[in-house]
Length: 298
Image (tube, rainbow, N blue to C red):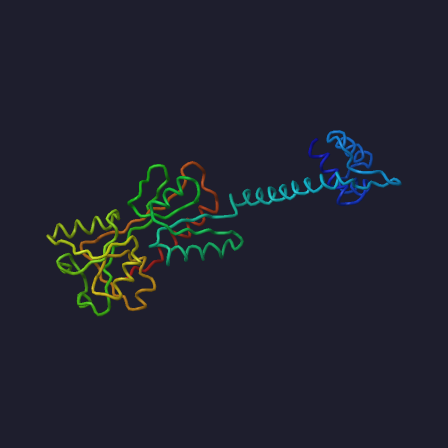
């Protein structure tokens, strides 16, 4: 059996006659009848009973039609997918980001992208940088944002952002009287630290060591936003990515620049094994636009 024979059968079933099917397919009525006969011979059972010159589907014919109809639904989905791929590369953009960029920067990019492409579906996953990197490498995400501690082997990595860290503290903390904070100011001050594998944490600890100050960590966490939340309501302070402070400063969190400068760096990640689809390239442009519009708190 071939597609033309199945198409003839499908059209007869939905139109009710070989004459109407011939009109719809723009072929002759005898050609439709031959296709039905060939299909019956191929299947080994009758699809229609001939009743007073009319074709009446047999029970077997009705059962077979249900299967053929399901196949046509699949073909319709394939046609829709092909149109979407032809125009955009995909009808879905799958994004992953570390939490520090998930609160403000990425939502701005999503908003700008959706104005241009309101019918394109976006999936957004917030996870640790190592997880984002692995999902990119496995082809489960189209693009991702991750901190610089990741292993960049096996992915296409592009520097995305580098912002100086700030010290987050409660509004009544004594350090709020200072316009800037250095390592010696943090001697014996309870600290909320990022996890030891974080590169910004490494650079901060090195700056403290160079100044001869031993950090007094009381809490460690993977996310700058958690550092902000903890610092707001206690006597401990912590170095945070300024992009993760959105919403906290409005609630009273105080930020002070830290010197020497400790940079929070992030990378934009892509799969290395395929050409970037149009939608992926466009979403990347919105991410850079959102980055360029960031006002870093100080």
